[in-house]
Amino acid sequence: MRPVRFAALVLSLATVASAEPLVWNGSFEDGREPWRGQGETRESGSAPEGEQVLEIQGLTNSWQGPRQHFGERLGNGFEYQGSFWLRPLSSAERARLGLLYQDDNGWHMALLAEVEQPVKRRWVKVVGEPVVVSWKGTLRDAKVQVIVDGDKNDPPDYQVDAIEVMKGAAIEELEDRFENNDSLDAAYDLGMLSLTLSAPELYIHNATDKSGPAGDRDFFRFSFEQRAPISIRLRARSGTADLGLRLYDESGQLLVESATKELSD
Image 1: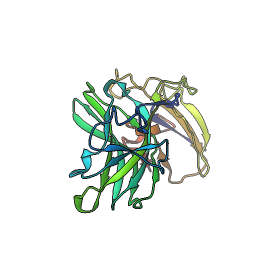
Image 2 (image 1 turned 45 degrees about the vertical axis):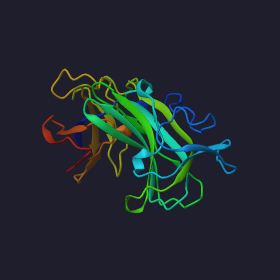
Image 3 (image 1 turned 135 degrees about the horizontal axis):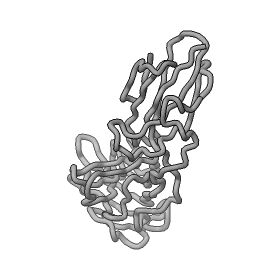
């Protein structure tokens, strides 16, 4: 048996906090405030929620659609999930719900929900996956916006209803169940490698400490019985970390290192 040790730099995990709404009056039952952009509220017997919808007509640019600014209510390093109801009144190629924010490096957009080629004059509910939103420096502005594109840059007419953006999980430090494993001698033993060895929830207990050249590191050890190619894959939860990995042999000699999310040998 030939034991092999490897060290991995990984992300502190995210915990799921109670979700809270970020958008106000997303169903337009109280008129169009605080929404900006073109569009008028209409009573509709087919409204997915309540009796009112927002109808947008005559745009010359897709970015003239409804938007709502919320500034300081946007939290740095939180997960956000969005959804909305859409009813195209003319041919539409794509509809998006974007969370746009401006920091010291300019404007950025997190795509909250998207649908391709929605059917004309039919309501469709568009629901996205959670995304993590973070910025550097000062947050200067933030807004949620509906963008509906037509064929050949001709914005279609459409109705929207029940626009929702939920603020969910924040990146928080959790108890590290593998500590103390901050050196090769103290490496946590993951056991024997057979066909596949899965070790979920690897955790760096102080990922924000950058006092050293490589930041904080944790060490793990596994073993295998015969010579064979191996592949090691690391995945950061919510895609919020840069991953680095070093592979050592049993004597502590460095075999290979990688700054990507996958290392094969």
